[in-house]
Length: 593
Image (cartoon, rainbow, N blue to C red; front, side):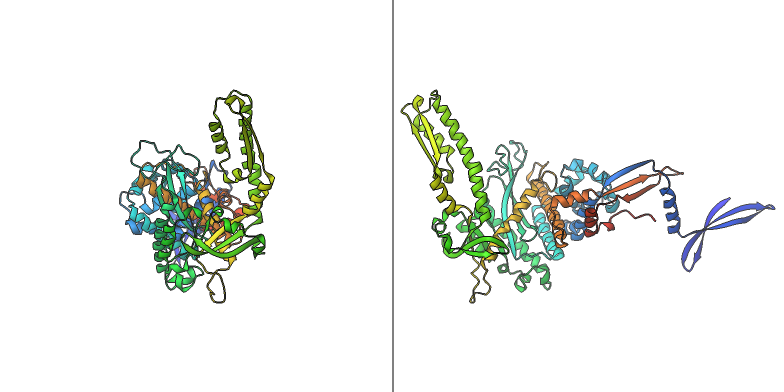
């Protein structure tokens, strides 16, 4: 009869297999075999299993889910949310913070409905390293968690998460970009529980759908969202500017207050920024936010700004000769030239920088000729052919109105000559042409030019804290970071605002929060890769990580439950680089000996 028994040696436990038999009627040990420690026995079993073919295998999603969860853990997102809302209820499968963190994770890697989240989670390795089983992820649990978040708590949570990101990633908040967009929804017209969703000017061209507006403020480096604000889709962007600025000042003050004494984690603005002084921050925005009231609001808030005005508003600047322009920076912006001057803008004398970019010039010329003029030409030709058939009943005024509609663009109107002859509808004939001389004048006067405005003084010996032209240009071009963020939120595959399966203002606001949190996670992953020298897009990073899977090998039972062994699949060099960069080995299945 065989049995296993243990011995204690210097405080450690070791196991032996001994064989007992009756000899002359008495039990005696006939053999003893050393097995080793518990770890030695486990390793031996793994080696035995490795030599046996598994009955079946399962492939689980690992890399992208693990990277997202690792980032959520590093920022303590669930802990921050729970610190605002209170501890987990006894009857809840997880805390509110955990549910919202998982909702953001889902938005990041596989946008979908809450009702499908449990099935998604069951196909990942997440339940192993989070200890959260799919059984507690019913969509009603997510809804219960969302209902517990008040609007004030949502803003408090957003502020604390922003402060944590600034601290952990040493984000530079000395310059930020502000912009707004909207998202089309499928909320029914008769639904009166979502006044946040309104019909307006749809930036996705879906004028038939109700819209949710979203404003954000992001860091100049990395495009990390710091502030967000959801608003009814029928409100002009310019009216939401003061609200975003107020959110920014409050969040900035709170974030910097949490980091007093650790100014190095706030950015490059030094002591002023560490004290929460808004004079250390510059807000960058486009011409769509311009109004005298908004500039006054910026001044009251103590914030610097870099903005722009439409070139058509400043014909005197456009008329200045090219000889007045000076090179900005041959290394950073080759070929870009500028004129640094002052003029009255929105009721105040402001610094104005007119820039000219050869690349923008060529792009505008190509688009104007190849797209705009070609489209106008086709429409005018079709109208001319219709008139030539002599069967139209339109009066001269109606035909003229149609031509004005086709040539409504100011640039088109400037370069197009047309002539309508005939006194009756059947006699009307249209001829048109593009005037090459006026086309050349337009190109030289307008193409490639932008007009920037700022309250930063020019850098001189008497104003050493001023900004050189190159800094003004670089600041304004950081708008591209927030534009990229909005495009990311409209990507249906990753970090997507849609589909949205919520029909009340409260749940829409919480949904927006999880989407912005997903965007924060995505851009922090990209920022970490960028700082490590890996220049990749969010999509490329997530697609590469998604290729890292965990395989579950299920072996035949030898008595009891079947034995399962988990292994991480072989990786390409690109996958291994990101695996190491995001420290996924901390969440990977233990490697068998």
